[in-house]
Image 1 (cartoon, rainbow, N blue to C red):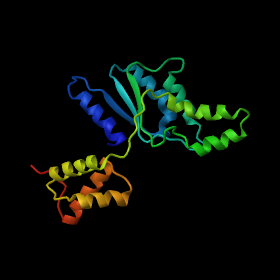
Image 2: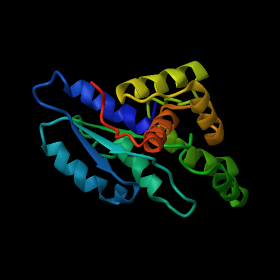
Image 3: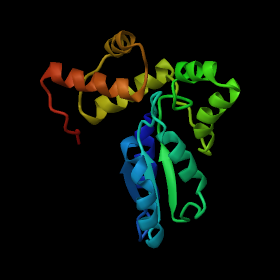
Image 4: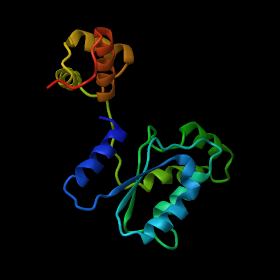
Amino acid sequence: MGKSSLVKTAHAEVNADRTEAIALIEIHREDIATLPLLLARLRAAERRCILFCDDLSFDGGDASYKSLKALLEGGIEGRPENVIFYATSNRRHMIPRDIMENESATAIIARETVDEKVSLSDRFGLWIGFHACYQATYLAIVDGYAQAYGLAATHADAIEWSLTRGARSGRVAWQFIQDLAGRLGQSMTQAD
């Protein structure tokens, strides 16, 4: 149920039946300036590649998002056919709304400033929302983890854990199981 987990799982699943695996190359936001060099090298390679940037977001004074927009569009050379770009973000528009609004207040044409910053998100063809899961789903995840690791977990404890964290998700379920194993003095090795 996590963004990064989804990318890694999809990559592993696609590669499961391939003779030539697709490369998963993780880049950091700080590496955006080096992407043209990387893309030039990857263009020369025959192997298909996924460039993956986890938790992509930009602060107010950071203009590197403009470079990324140009790269996603392909610039003059175009994006290499063997490369696709995946990014995860906790923000819908990757740039905080208050920064967009503050900068648009001083712009000659205020809407253009906001549109320019929002347009980075528009370069990604697919958006997937990750929302809190239903309690039954959360408890099923807890049960699955508990069974896999041979732990006796109660639903009441799992619900209390999720309430104190303010969320129900796969990550919260996993954290509950790790905490439970620690309290029980049990290792996190999978049961047979």
